[in-house]
Image (cartoon, rainbow, N blue to C red):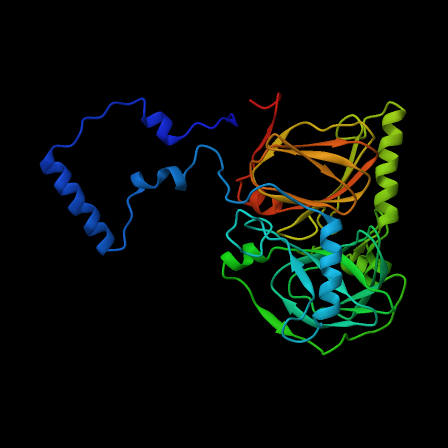
Amino acid sequence: MSISAENTTHESVAAGITAPEPTPEEAAQLEQLYRDFDKENLIPLWTEIGDLMPMVPSPKAVPHVWRWSDLYPLAARAGDLVPVGRGGERRAIALANPGLGGTAYATPTLWAAIQYLGGRETAPEHRHSQNAFRFVVEGEGVWTVVNGDPVRMSRGDFLLTPGWNFHGHHNDTDEPMAWIDGLDIPFVHYADAGFFEFGTERVTDEATPDISRSERLWAHPGLRPLSGLDDTTSSPIAAYRWKYTDAALREQLLLEDEGHPATVSQGHAAIRYTNPTTGGDVMPTIRAEFHRLRAGATTETVREVGSSVWQVFEGSGSVVLDGETRTLAKGDLFVVPSWAAWSLQAESEFDLFRFSDAPIFERLNFNRTYIEGRTK
């Protein structure tokens, strides 16, 4: 099956076909037919096919960039004015896609927010159906407690809170800390699959270990405990540490220098965070990756079914979204809607975290990818 990125429409095809005009009697009968459809809550396909079955995806979400230099000061102001506690639960500020009519969604399937926790503050425990993660672009001093396991949060760490796991956060320092939350809230909401339950008023364990129990058991490359041979829906590793991510990307580029195949493309190293029990994605609805581009490197222009959110971890560069170039700096976030064309250009060494809804579309066999100049 070929995949086209062309903007052919039903209307443009129909315009080339000459159909006879209805007689006055037929026109009157058609008007009555449509009134009868309305009366019975029916809608004919032939009046809606362009919206229901477009030639290529036509998302309402639009490409957009949020600047860290704007987000962080706003979060800090919220830290001064908005308490953390029961009811609101979290001081999290969602990225609202301008194309989605005021909903608190980055894309129709993904929720992303900056969460801010002040010094010595505690966000109480709760759990919910939605799958969640944290990614830390800067700072330390907070522990997230997942099902009673305290997990240190530090710069570059990717931390999981799979659905229906109790979790809360506590800041053990006098300084505030902010990070990015990612969840599948929109997908769960539209599917009417959401549940929520309150936990303790604080957290069940206020310890501050350097390494969580889940890491001690599971985070040894290539090794799996015999006490955990059953596959799990989500990864049992609570934190994927930056030192391992950084080392993996660095070695890919070094191998490329030595003439060995190791990178996605010239100057472009990338990893996917995986569930060690299955080799698949860390959670059933969310894929997470990290990308590093050498200074001067560029990626191919790609279109994909499904949406993604990116955050710049370090360095500077730009993203081209549907032909428009947006410059990027540390902490900036941008969204790529379904079938939007994107490519990256690195000015300096360019590190980016990415999460997407790819596991959903792959399981449904709706996934498609178009690479400009390569895919027919």
